[in-house]
Length: 121
Image (cartoon, rainbow, N blue to C red):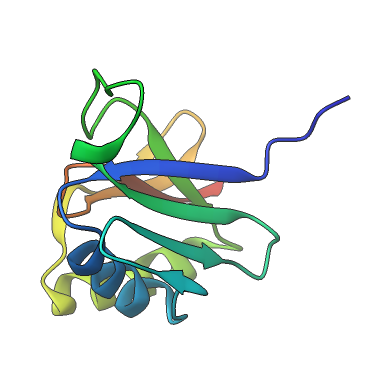
């Protein structure tokens, strides 16, 4: 069995995106260059930010075609993160709302990648 543990996002400017994710996640990248930044998260997941113009083979997709999801313990935690991200000026695509799978909101990074925060209910 294989177990995915690495997400790569294609971004316009890895340094700018690394700053965004450093502020959002509260952790600095473990690797950073002009074309790539890598975060090693407590969960074991690795998040890579790769300069779109250097990806081989050429990437056909851009942000918004998938989501990175952040599961939370309860509605209060979802609301706290929402308030923090709004205060930071993060673009919000969907305000907190009850959906069939739980309570959730969606934000966007600088490249249009969707960031879903939710608590399953």
